[in-house]
Image 1 (spheres, rainbow, N blue to C red):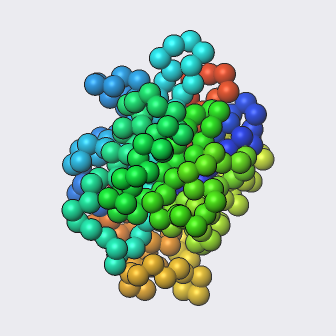
Image 2: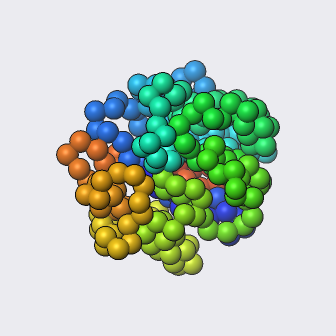
Image 3: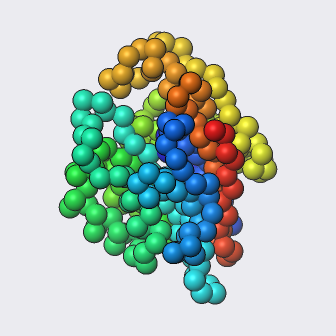
Length: 247
C-alpha cells in the first residue's frame, strides 16, 4: 500500500471507512482480494511472491464477533533499504490469520520490528484501531489506540504532509460529509495529477521519480497503482472490502 486515508469513529454506524491505493511493480505476481483457502475468515489480496498481504479484513467467526482490519505501507528511504529484510506483508497476513487483539499483536512484533524495512501498520477492529511504525519512535501515537479523526498515510509517517496525502484527506472528508457512494471514493483514488515541484517531499529519490510518485494514482511503464480498495467496518454488521483492479 502506498496511500491510505481513513476515518476512525467519525460515523458511529461505520467506525472505520478506509480508501487506499496499492502501488507495486507490475511484474510482481499477486492475487486479487478473496477468501484465503487455509484461513477462510480472511478476505484479502495476496502477494504471490512472498505470501503476505497489503490490506485485508476478516469476517467474524461467531455471531456478535467483530470484523478485523489490517493494512501496511512501506516507508520510502532508499539509503536504509535492506534486500535481506523479511517481507512486510507478513505483518498483515499474520494478524488477520491470528486471534490476537491489535494491542497484543503490536506488543508481540515490537521487539523484532527493526528487522523489517520501514513500515506503517494500521490494524484493529470496530472498537480499537492502532497505527504502528518501526520508524515512528518520536510520535506519541505510535503503537497506541488512535483517537477519532481522519488520517492519511503514504510512504512516510502518519499524517506526514505530502501533497497527495493532504489533497486526498480533504477530498475524503468532503465525501464523508456528503454520504458519498463507494464509486466516489474510487474516483478520488484514480487521480493521476502530479504535484508541482515546489511541493514535493525529498525522500532520497531523483526529482523525476518524486514527480511521478506524487500522484494519487501512479502510472509508469513498469510500476504504478495496481489496485484501489474501499473498506468499511460496521458497528453491528460484518465488514466489507471492495477492490478495483487497475493493472
